[in-house]
Picture: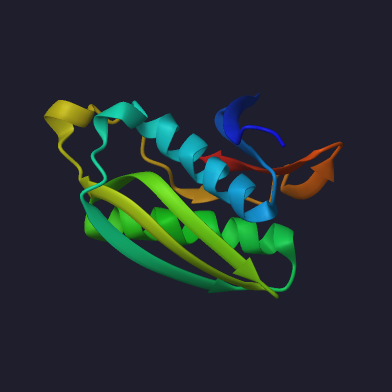
Length: 139
């Protein structure tokens, strides 16, 4: 068993997000955390409001891109940032809950606005004893 975690990786003018977990759903949660961490320090985002997200896509890689793009849509339309995620994946159907709060520019000091998750370096795979979910996000 690994401890789920995330990291960023460099990609020209954009930023790569990579999540690690014991199952694909955990890796998807961690990739979402990595994406939020591009915008601001995760510890500054209080998980006060819950938003539900559903995506359907049989291909796991396309499902990851859909998931991250659904989060970007919610951040943009609700003017929120998220710091906690719970993802369930069953036969190409992703059901998730994201917790966060309205963006407070003074407190969160958002560094960038994420425009979208891309198919660049898009990958969901098992590597040794862990799942890895990654892609490049356009900032």
